[in-house]
Length: 182
Image 1 (cartoon, rainbow, N blue to C red):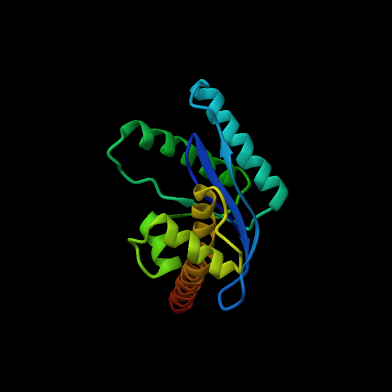
Image 2: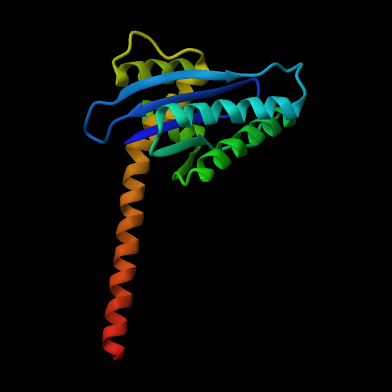
């Protein structure tokens, strides 16, 4: 499975692509950040983030997209920018019909480090270890995006299988109900 992870933000939108599956080594294809200047008007910043995400989708053709779920912070302007960038990521993926999952920061941290309270340095260190890198992807936003992709491969794949099994079961129950009603 190839997953594009996105750590949304207006100034730095972390982005990374990881390939692999549960029980097999994972491989980092690329990681970076889409950057915009705070001096640029908001519509142009949003357009730059959207274009950047579209370029990554074109280049890496992921099978799924994992986006950090926006959570309330003390700084309202930061939350708004993060939410706007998150919305762009969701729209870009939906436009292509890609499955999208949102993971909370603590969920991604727990998947990567074993603790939902891990700091950025711990997450970066574990991302590097998991992927066999000499150091964490830079900037830190890119490492966070990669952590989201890893989290999705490890957790999202299982969640997708459970959802599919539930759908299959519901379909079989409906077929059995119809067969009895004939």
